[in-house]
Image 1 (cartoon, rainbow, N blue to C red):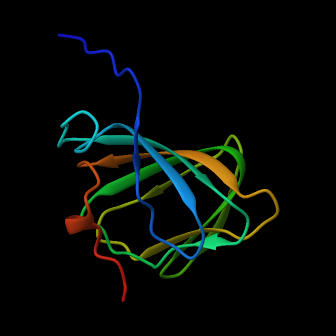
Image 2: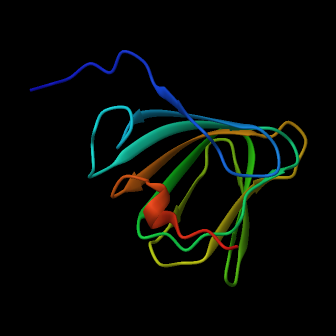
Length: 120
């Protein structure tokens, strides 16, 4: 049966500056374990600790630029582009450029603090 999601739940973000995470589908807002869908808005200069998650993450940038660092590559993902970070890969997200970024992140299975495995 279809289910209307009336509104997202704001999730506390990790990082050096404030970032807004609005989970529409996932463990917190809809009780969904299989996938999470969240809109992110981060300011210029935001960065979070690197992680080696137990989920695949699919990210579509809506505006601005999201920097994605992996073990061997760095991508500046611009509005209209996407990036896929497979589970088990070391990755770090940031928005160092002017204007920050707005993007949608889809995690399979759904994001949780227990399976993100952030660096200390």
